[in-house]
Amino acid sequence: MKITRITSHVMQYDLPEELGYSQQYYSRRTAHLVEVETDEGLVGWGECFGPGNVAIANKTIVEKVIQPMILGDDAISRDVIWHKVYNLLRDHGQKGMPLQALSGVDIALWDIAGKAAGMPLCKLIGGPHSTRIPAYGYGMMLKRESVEDHVARFRDEAAAILDMGFKATKMKVGLGPKDDVRLCESVAAGVAGKGRFMVDANHCYTTSDAFYVGRALDELDAYWLEEPVAPEDLDGYRELRAGLKVNITGGESEFNRWGWRTILENRGLDIAQPEVCALGGISEYLRVLALAHAHFTPVVNHVWGSAIAVATNLHLLSAMPPLPGGLNPWEPMLEFDTTHNSFRDDLLTKPLEIQRQVKETGGYVSIPDGPGLGVEPDRDFIRNYRLDV
Image (cartoon, rainbow, N blue to C red):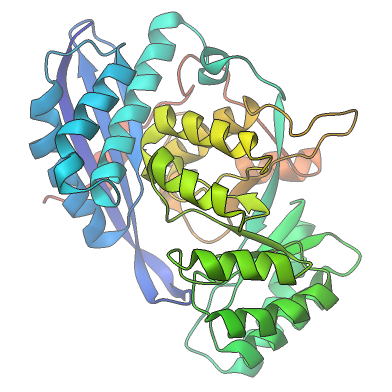
């Protein structure tokens, strides 16, 4: 089965309201899908991590750099293709956008492999360890408003997300350490007696500021503090993990098995958060997962993007073996963005309906059961939102 064409579909629309996190505000949502076609008629879909102009740059890498390397190659030989592309791009970037672009292609090839075998991705990997996945909802984004308005809104939104049925909720911080503690206190009050909450700093703190916020989170019984410091600051991660009770998480900004080997050997994470649409696709994700479990580090995948990314991660979480195992094993969760996302909710011919499932099941989401990813995008929807770049 030969690869005949690879197409990038970069889609974008204006959000109903501006949203922010510790690094920036944004008013548009972007998604970058990759479509791989074959001479036997099977088509695979993947997704590349990266918003805005990053998606446009990745489109060029997918279509103008990677596609010429692998046209005519056997679509089923995805590991051969992965190493061919990585080796040819090694001199130009072992991390970042080249790996994001390769991720979308690799996911699409796994989708093709599942369709060719007539089985869902989770079975192709090795079988489902679970048939449904608990989900947590994140929201509580930053806005151009006062601290007092943030405090009141975060408390109400945290309670509302748990009332939707999600098992836990995650907030953003980034107003500054003292104001961020106020935000965390309001969220802790909002979720009291209902569930857990987590905090995502998007690497905005120095180590000392992360300790200041982290000590408050210890008292508030937060479940984790995500990306507290810059991803390059491995010493800071290790110091924070050793000095705080709250779980330290991160890794969405890391790429490939070699980057992850360094992080895991450093012992700075309580929970690893690989991003399959960025680190090198499913092929590389499975190697990173094996590394994490070899270091006895639990994994909760980072999830951002369209319904393709969500479906991919549902299969990966389903196929994840329990760590360390037992009658009541530790469970990974599906990350779900509760803010407006038409690329997740309206993209597919048969929507995943995550929020409906969560409400009806008390916080759980089922795995798509069709071959490959088990989902198909609506081409009319793609044409309607596609950027002509």
